[in-house]
Every structure is written in structure tokens, then in C-alpha cells.
Image (cartoon, rainbow, N blue to C red):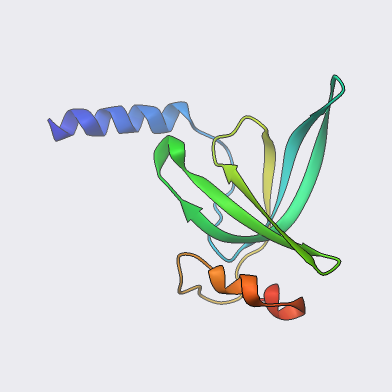
Length: 116
């Protein structure tokens, strides 16, 4: 019975296949996502650090934290969302990240909040 479940999971993974580069928690990524405005669709970039990944298979999502002008912003994207146009890894983590979720970055300000 578990073999059948494995087949279903394998088929779901293939159907949700995206050609995103491999990124992990701690990497700095740039996401281009679609915004619908007055009948138009434009691409809006956001660059930030991946602070958490959660879920699995089709429910997988990730959160990106960005700081601009002293204000922080966190955006959570479903991994297989149709609004995501492209993901690009700008900078991998500078050293090995030893946490699954980087919630401690929320308390940091300035350059300390951008270096993992």
C-alpha cells in the first residue's frame, strides 16, 4: 500500500515541477512576481533573505524578509504559486546555517540583520 502512495507523491511532484534554482534558508534571493493593476499585469521584484521554509509537496511555502529604509517586510509565497514569474539566487548563505527557521533575524537591525 505504501508503494501506491509513493507513486501518487511522485506524480504530484512531476505535475508541480517548476524550474526554480535550488535555494535554502539563509540564501539571498530575488523574486519576480506578478501584480494585477487596472487590467495590466506588471512584474514586481523583491530581494531578501529566506528566513523559513515550511510544508511539503504542493503545500510548500517560503518566507522572504527584506529591510528597506529601516523598515522590515516579510512576504510568504507558496512555492508553486502561479504569480511567481522567476526566482534567482543572488547570494548563497555565507556560512552553514544551523537553524531551520531564522526567526532571530527579526530582532536585528541594520547590517546585522542581513548577514547570516
